[in-house]
Amino acid sequence: MEEKIIEIKDLLHAKRFSELKEYLKEINSVDISSFFEELKGEEIIIMYRLLDKEKAAEVFTELDSDIQEKLIKVLTDKELKDVVNELYLDDAVDIIEEMPSNVVKRILKHIEPEDRKTINKLLKYPEDTAGSMMTTEFIDLKENMTVEEALAKIKKIGVDSETVYNCYVLSATRKIVGVITLEKLLLSNLDTKISDIMDQSIIKISTTEDQENVANMFDKYDEYALPVVDKEDRLVGIITVDDALDILKEEQEEDFEKMAAILPSEDPYLKTSVFTHIKNRIGWLLILMLSATITGTILAKYEAAFEAVPLLVSFIPMVMGTAGNSGQQTSTIVIRALATGEITLKDWLKVLWKEIRVGTLVGLVLFVVNIVRIYIQYQDIQMALVLGLTLIFTVIVSKSIGCLLPILVKKIKKDPAVVAAPLLTTVIDLCAIVIYFQIATSILTGIKGV
Image (cartoon, rainbow, N blue to C red; front, side):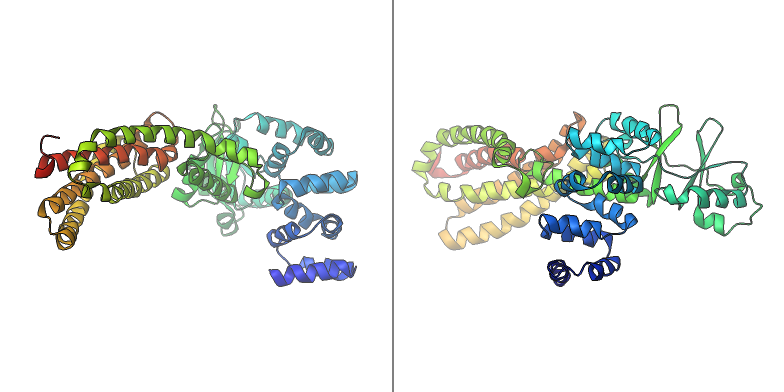
């Protein structure tokens, strides 16, 4: 990639534009869009104008919104119209949502009235739903068509459709009654009726379905495209697998940020202002800082225990670290299983019972290792027993909390990722400290009665 961008820059600087134009024809549109990030000012405009009409539209959809805005401002009306006419409607909606109002007006001016009406409808669907991400450019067929008639229609409208592989069979009221693939059409006799060979087991998506659930449906059913229906069960659009991949990427990035106690940001890291970074992080940091005072209060309660057996203090980081890591392992697995549909809310008891068993066995292993280690290091069987029992109980409790907290958050219709790291760790730390000192005060003879 680096060699290609160097060659592109050399051709631009030498003004060998005809060579560059031919060179760009051999490169994938996605790769070309990544080259634009390395260019500046006039280089961006010149290189974009060297692309042929179809490739220019493909590249445009992949560009960063800042570069898109810059190009829209400098392109002539004819150039902008050529780009807009090549865009699929769902891509046009995505671009419009990113642009300032003055740029949106210029884009809409070059969109056909019928398409503009459709775009306005798509923009009205709630954000992050199937309706907001679908495209209305699909191939629909009638039940009474023959294969020959169906293929003729595909040839006629296929060039403007998002995909020709999946075709949707509609009734007179536009309700979806079947699905048929292009492969099946090509392999069937030309006089065969569509109703005789279509697949009637249809997987449909509601316009109000959450986008994360939509992406998981693609993973579950291995489809290239899924139909979207309205409240009356009429086909209004389709969602393709490339859209599902974009959603999965977006959701993963959002979950990573939430798991780190950061409010999700729509902009890339370098393009997000310092103030926005602070705003996205400070809230949780303040909450967690204040919650840590509870841990401090509990530790202060056992101050006499520290004085009687100073060695207790040295094991606090290990106890809290083990508890936090155990809970984090479980919560990560449970959050993923909830997201992919492997487990549901009604499975909470099964999940809890499994994690209790896992925690017990893991705790026993840690118990044995620490009994041996501490006895060899300090020759103190009581301290070894305290640490061993503490680890068993803290691991069991941590894993129980780690599985139940995400399920509880899901139950109240919130994102389980928000509890994954900071909130979960805070709760578990408190439990670990209480367990540690309760066991210590019960076993160690030096602090009896504390």
